[in-house]
Image 1 (tube, rainbow, N blue to C red):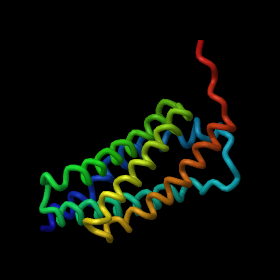
Image 2: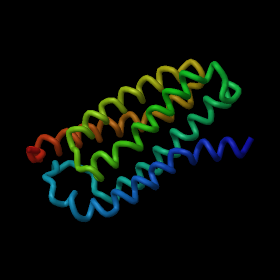
Image 3: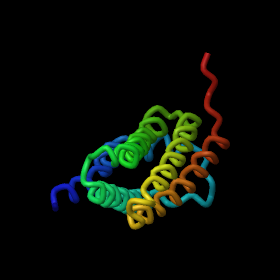
Length: 161
């Protein structure tokens, strides 16, 4: 029982590690050139927050997986939504920091936030603790979406010919 719990809890961190490799370079170069709102969290907060959120969502996925008896027909929707939001989560960093596509990243973040909400709705009847573990993540995504919007608004992307 420990292997599935540790594996599912660790899974979200894989994308976080990959994203961190992209972010580490860009946060010192491209990101410093952007106009950002005064209320944005300091850069040092992001790795701490994401480590906490990834651990919570990963453990929540384990609780749902365990409650439904593994990867079964019943787990298709709740874990499928979870997998979808995880893929969207992992995609944001390469879009924003890698490709510097601020508007596309904002659109992607709105889709991610909606998918997290749908995941939470699907998890609620299965395991309320798992749903509550996603709450801080949804709240952080609201902050991240607002931050992404402000950066997009204040930094128009150059016109492509």
